[in-house]
Length: 339
Image 1 (tube, rainbow, N blue to C red):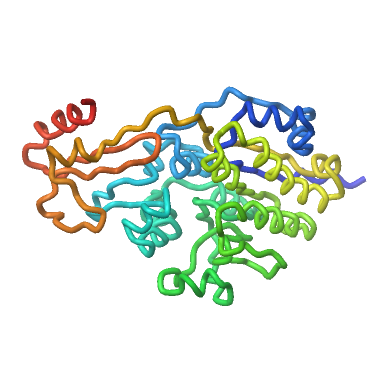
Image 2 (tube, one colour):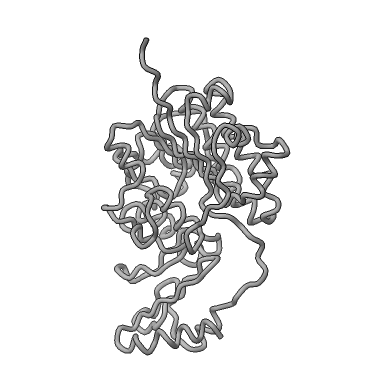
């Protein structure tokens, strides 16, 4: 009798998933795959996200297994001292417009995986690629692996962003990143990578990979729960978690059903962070601008700037840019921020 084949692994990252919403989705029967996983496996509701609990920080920790003191991705928006400029990963449409769409795309696709994430910090893809494991990934912030992927020139999104997205990327063996990079032809489309339509692309690609036995490890990114929660509030997550479960169900059907899928695949479903209602906001900008010369998003007036101000949704970072007198500058920044 031949030995049993080792089970494959699917790591499903459901962006912003709230444990209480997951529990309601399971209890009401709206998430059958996640329910089967909790019944057959282990459910750990008491997890702690990194701080600041925003997607770039937490997603990088999931992909590398280390915290931001080592992976060096500190927020959604931050100041890159080596380059003397802001980095913006796309916290909002208005932020991307202020900092520049071209730069934001370049930072998110190329620099995060190249310049920002240190080469000595290996991703899960790099480690498994080195071990001869067949890796695969859908659209996720951290994609760095050992396999080169060229831009898919015939896709609408790549044509739209052709002036910016020209270079290949290093990723897992099978990579499907929006409609920009695709390691092979499928019937799946990312609909320009628009929020609210990204989970269906991941589910389509994941089902194709499972049906055709193309990978041993799959990082299945399901980001639309985060978008839905921001638009409708954390208490509305049951619907978007049910949508994410339907994508897992597509993989299960490709494997012969939920039981067959869980018999042949180890599946980990994890959130990068959770959500809570916004009870109050802080308008930090006027307080800082009244006291300091703040570096503009465009970088204009950089020689005279004293402070770089980086809002990152649940937190903000202030960088002292003046080397001489910095010891006196930092306490003033803290005092202004706390007033």
